[in-house]
Image (tube, rainbow, N blue to C red):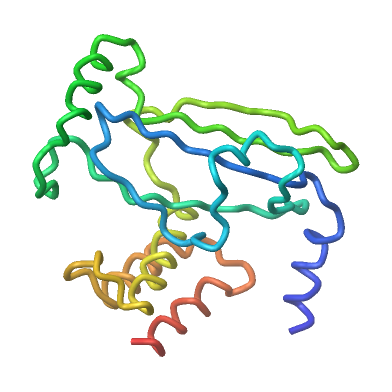
Length: 190
């Protein structure tokens, strides 16, 4: 337990960004539907994204935050509903714009420690993202575990064996054994 405390304590001593807010907009000509996995209790209203008086999460040195979205592309066989009347017209107009090659757009706001005014970083989300690394795949396994624990209706026939296999394949170096411990928790939960 001391090793865990020491390895994690350094990240909480120094705040590197406060009131961190993330906003994602998906391109309707590329994304039919999406959902954020988790963070339901952290959602902000759209108008609060630019409001520097609305508190959000702080980030410590060495910390990372992962937000995973399940995305259903336009034209996917998973789409089982008819297109919306007005959305198709918006998509036709969007296809003429150069932004159609983007999957989406990400905006991040944060305040430097001690600052009252936020700074904005914005990035496009490419249609063809980079191959997922071990950290991403492990985060996906943990998110899948959360879905299985809550009996989410969206997992289909994806189950504990799939979550455990994904996590085992993404353990990487696992210097402190945290990922192996997470896999053990998955086995217990199964």
